[in-house]
Image (cartoon, rainbow over all chains, first blue to last red; front, side, top):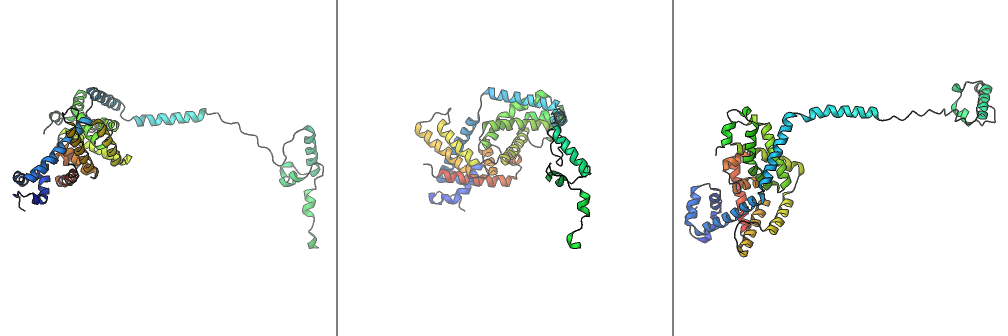
Length: 175
Length: 188
């Protein structure tokens, strides 16, 4: 590669040298640029743009003095807090657990609903209660042992068929 | 570049007093903030991450062995925080960049520099071209580019901050400069 070329038409072939010079990498690049007006112009143009860019970045990132003081104050405060509270989570976790348990204990529980015996159904008056007792006596079967479906389906006025008789009645096809 | 604070800290990190650390914060907060801000383009996030950077540094002072300057060590912590932040939020640099371009156009920038209106337009175009070039780079390439040309850091320092080899830093810079020169060709 001819690094001493002054010809503008050859400049493109030396682009890596311009980059090297911009990065500040090697003397070969510097030597070429000192002898090539085109590459030197390209380098200056790029350098200028980069300088403007950097200046704008610094300007945009600059903040008033009060901002830095405030930030330093905040860092100091958080640092002290963390220093005296090495593990906030370690302290807060059991406390949160305790609060949760207390909250669960303090929440009023709903009183348990008395379970209605589906077999008997709700008894609304003394008269109904007497009829129910009479049916139970007539059937000869304690309420607790009476089949649920039978007790529910049988109307109050009809008498209950004794369970034993039904069980002993032979099926017609047996004869 | 040897940091003076480093020589104070290196012999006995555990002996570091609170006021010593406050001095470290005062000395380095501007650069750390600027670095984070350049990568995130978000003032609030940059503020938060700068704060977190110093808190982590304080927490892990014991792991600082003095092999690099204190500032390089702090920048490395900041770079890691930015990387984690970007991963978590999955933010698009493109969106930030578009936001920035609007911001530049409005403010014009360069408040401290005397420029003619024509020069101002040209400078704005140049800066936008550089941003366009930066936008096509990967996050790592962009970080290398910004550390070199805005923070003016040495290649070895950049490699140290970003945990890369010097060769990788060079190749990222070549890639970045190619992109910049390509974009600048369109600017008259």
